[in-house]
Amino acid sequence: MTLALVVVLGVMPAWGLPKIKVLATGGTIAGAQASQADAGYKSGTFSVDDLIKAVPQLKNIAELSGEQVANIGSQTMNHEVWLKLAGRVNQVLARDDVDGVVITHGTDTMEETAYFLSLVVKSDKPVVLVGSMRPATAISADGPINLYNGVALAGSPEAKGRGPLVVLNDSIHYAREAQKMHTTHMNTFDSPNRGIAGVMNTGKAFFYSNISTRHTTNSEFSCEGLTVANLPLVVVVYSYVNLGGEFIDAIVEKGVKGIVLAGVGDGNTTDAAIAALERASKKGVAVVRCSRTGSGVVDRNVEVNDDKLGFIAGMELSAQKARILLMLALTKTSDVNKLQDYFYHY
Image (tube, rainbow, N blue to C red; front, side, top):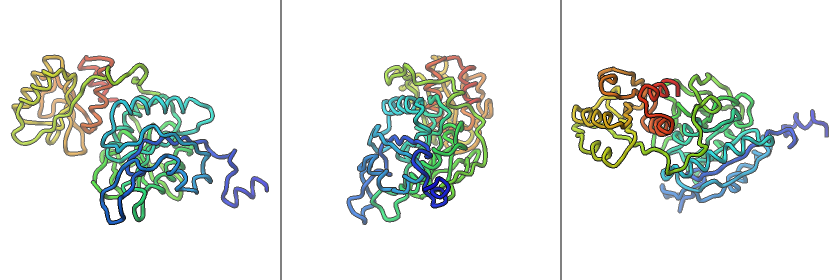
């Protein structure tokens, strides 16, 4: 059979397909219910091979191999798995026989893993994170179509150089922009500040925009030499009515290196909390202001005098992503001006 006829029939020969590595970490996409009537489920029940076999159409769009990096619910994702995953992604993408990577992941912390990878992966080859809102055993499970779209996107030349991407419900999101917005809806992910990167349609990627912030090959950060032990301790403090300064003082005494404020409005909080954060800053703790609202810019010296207090403006980053950037940035410097520059560019 000639190549032209094979293509017309809709099946590419294996040697003409992109070579995609699927790295599995568990999550709902690999989850199973006790029964169809049970809203609960156990994450990470199925293996990476099970997921691939469940979507036989994948063999028509990519030459696949799978590897189980972890098998957990993403609510228990941790720095140890992050470093293992990032190291493996870098190893795999350095190979000439791999064109892209797909990572199966729970949706709860997918945005955080994606952003971490965007800062430490050192390749311009596509990295695509996929998951699902329904377990594999559910009626109308969304995992198979999300995995299919993820593999198709990872094999697409248009995805190259864009950093890690998140794909769910036919929408493509840049790692920096993706945010889980709903507990159960299929379209749980949004990119509230700059909009989605594009869409998937019948296995094809259509991009709407490019990403302008630094990532992957342009990032100053790396996971080389990083261990769980030498990652600086950075915590998030959530602002609310009547927040006092006692907890902030306590975590400073425990040796925290950075504090990210999930503040009200444009990164504000109570007078007592501001005073405690100022005390922390004077002791050398890096303090970043973000907003609990879920979108918008937290710029310098708006309502809060960052110059006077020694604070850092988190700009567009959510508190959970600001924690990641601050943690990596503190492995390089404790200079407040340099730290602020990172938040301008990443």
